[in-house]
Amino acid sequence: MARHPSLLRYLDKELLASELFQQAITHRSAGRHHNERLEFLGDSVLNLIVSQHLYRHCPEATEGELSRLRAHLVRGETLAEIAAASELGRYLKLGSGELKSGGQRRESIMEDALEAIIGAVYELRGFEAARDFVHALYGARLDELPEAEALKDPKSRLQEWLQGRGEPVPEYRVLAVRGEPHRQVFRVECRIPSRELVTVAEGGSRRKAEQAAAGQALARLQEGAA
Image (cartoon, rainbow, N blue to C red; front, side, top):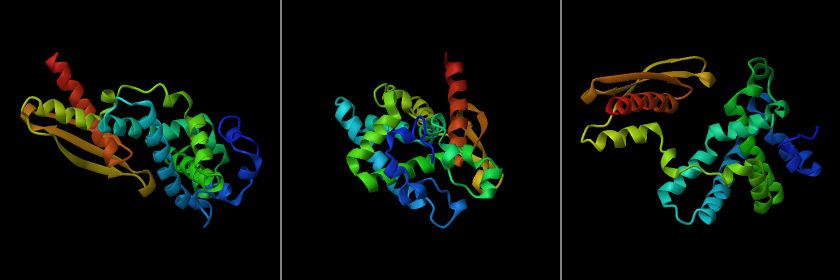
């Protein structure tokens, strides 16, 4: 395998050639020895590494603030950005169906593969090597952290905005689900009866659609209150 200019340069040739690393870049569509178990391991290792970093470098942060910062750093969107920037998709082993449907560019597949690679590094080289690998991958993301308060998700911020005014929490309802099982799109409604406000949004999961609808509702409420 060719050395990767951004991601694989942090790994030695022996590790890249290992059976475990090859498994880490293999999607379940490509064979029985795929990366799902390594993804499970890598997810836990990544959470521990990020938690340790935040604990040591954010001494004034509360538990809630640390949790929000960690969620921001280990969320799928962040992992997909790192994977895409390093063109990880080019090196994934996918079944013919996934290749034809553009699986090498699908965020969920790249996220899982990146976690699986972290799991493989941990298994083959230990915690310190995995920590160094994660720190190298994340780079400035670990040091240039956003304000924890700004990381509250739209649903939480909307609920706090309403409760701060003595109003009931929003109601969410799935209006429609379309697409194939592995590529579904959810259409969700956020309803605030006390304000006679309804917003509708779509997302790749129910959670994402609800967050988008909540974000729209909060923006309209704040605009009206300005």
